[in-house]
Amino acid sequence: MARKTRHVVPNSDGGWDSKKGGAERASKHFDTKKEAEQYSRELSRKEKSELIIHKKDGTIQRADSHGNDPNPPKDKN
Image (cartoon, rainbow, N blue to C red):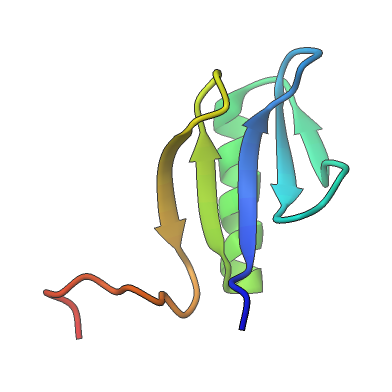
């Protein structure tokens, strides 16, 4: 089963977008990264998906799992 993801990505015209993994268009646009993260985290929890936050250059800054993590940390049961 393919994992579900939600991404916080920089918009080429400025600001930040929340996008569902594989989507062409953004779900919603924000002026600040913080606003985009808050909105995306809430959606990711509802979707039980992985939240992937990108840096301004497009590379991945961090990822947070809100669903069935295929690689849970060893110290968590």
